[in-house]
Length: 403
Image 1 (cartoon, rainbow, N blue to C red):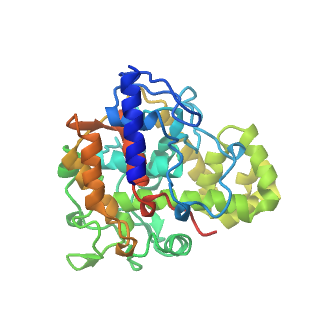
Image 2: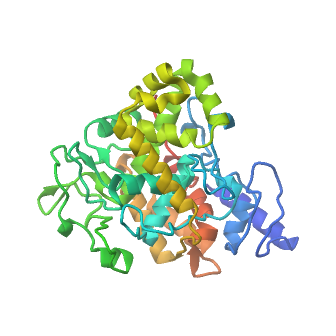
Image 3: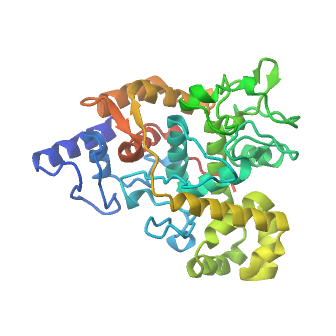
């Protein structure tokens, strides 16, 4: 940790002494780092963007993957210049800014409201698992219309509708240490009561036009007022669970169905929106059904899946495009006190045995990011902050699934 801080401070002073550290474009000093530094990031954020690869969120051997990472030809990167194409993958190095577009019109009859905390955890999941945030919002709108109190007849819960049977089982199997302290209500069969949640007016600072509950009164609790609550009903748990599930899906499909690898890669490289379609189809229909459909139906794999899944994929991609094509972007600012609250919401998703030192993390964030300013911004600073948190200790690095 000290070595990383010393290096970043060294870069900071070098850039400052060369009159390079200015608002706007910053000259680069090595390959595989953020090529475009724009906006008005803090000084420390600029030092991170100018010296690091934002995809490298592990600085120790113990948090490296035990298998090869996906090659570029198996990825389908979001391009802001092509908003009509919903891509699955996100390259954090493409820009220093985290620019998520607001949908211009109602989706599912809902005007989605996102709080500062929602936006942070959307960025957290997007950057750490390299998923296009607009795709994640498309999934959220299709699954729950932004209401984390939702429970389906199949036992799917929260904003991202993680099931308390197969979903729970897969997360336990693939991310055992990471989800060891997560709670599950295996008998849930109806919407959770509004009284279990922080009021929307308090959470958002306004009253949404439709039911949009996000966080329970006690995000880490197994029971609230005598009611058993699944962790994924809370937005921070739910979006992280979705991110981990998608990472498992894409690596499982690539590694465990090697006979399909070449044809799947060919589809991804030749047809826009294929990766997004594949991932949405697996999330709804299951990786087994998807692999069978790929085996027997080739590039027309959706025809081999249930009507529900075909409709689901169509809706997710449509919602994703709606967000990408929005003319406005989400903005937010964060005081140090608000960052402390976010660290607490991150920490509660980890098991105590992983020994996440949240107080040391908070102190280091304050010392480096808030030395000369009072606020950080979502658009200009959040990627640097997530990089800093993720590399602060190996226990905070993005998780790799057991395949």
